[in-house]
Length: 205
Image 1: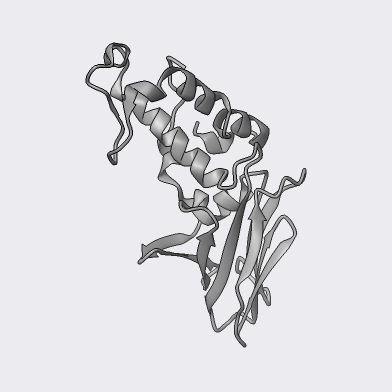
Image 2: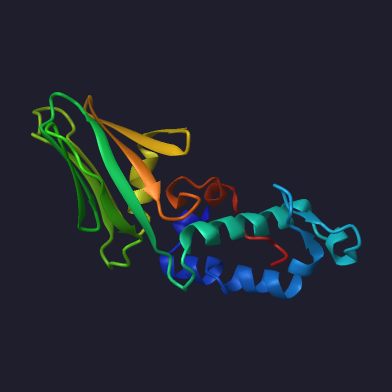
């Protein structure tokens, strides 16, 4: 399973600045690697590097991308500010309520302002839900996930498009849709980070 299946405390131990991956890399590998290109490469004169696979190197590069996305301010606890701006709501819905660990983003037909949530929030009973009001008989009106990765799993249910640096998430619930732009405080949005699904812990680690 990918990193998004582990507890946040274990995730932090592995990926935080000064964590297991970062510390091992800094102490043993950093001087052997050319990090100037889009893809890291072993330096030509690095004898040790020739004994390790490109896959191992790629996983350390992915770990660095995860660290930068989830720990943009440093520190040992993942924390990112995520701004949701509602821009579309189905005509059969008066209101859409996005609830991220009790942090509310509300969308309605009269107009919508951006709302910023902190994720992960660190709450013991983490959850994320999206509800459309009013409920409609015989049709789904809400989706909800529990656990520290609940917001990530909720967004996995959306249709995601990225254009010109803007990421948009469109949900369809029971035939009604609501859409948001989603912006994070880190350069790479951790909620849509390819490195998360691409990473696997190096066997040599």
